[in-house]
Length: 111
Image (cartoon, rainbow, N blue to C red):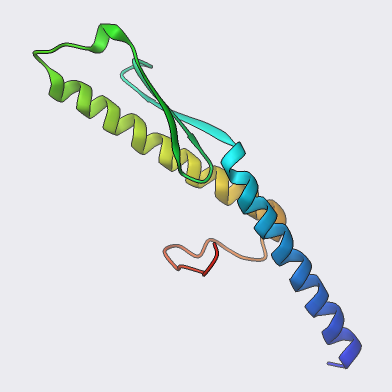
C-alpha cells in the first residue's frame, strides 16, 4: 500500500474515531424505558446506561408485600439497561457502518 493510500486510511480512521467519541457523548441524551407489572413500575434510563427516573404506581405499593415491589423494580431496571445497551449499539453502528461487529464483553478503552 502506498503512502497516499495509508494516509487516506488513517484520516478515515481518525474521522471515525471522532464520530464515535461524539456519539458516545450524545448517548446521555437518548432516553429509553423499561417497565414491569403491566407498567406499574417504569424506569427511564439513557443510552449511557444511567438510570434517570423510576416511577411506581401507588396501587402496586403494599407494605405487606415489599418483595413483589422489589422484584418489579428490579425487572424494570434490568429491562431499561438492556434497552439502553441495544440503543447504544444501534447508535454506534450508525457511525461504524457495521465495520465493527458486536465485540461482546471485550472492553475497548474509551468505549
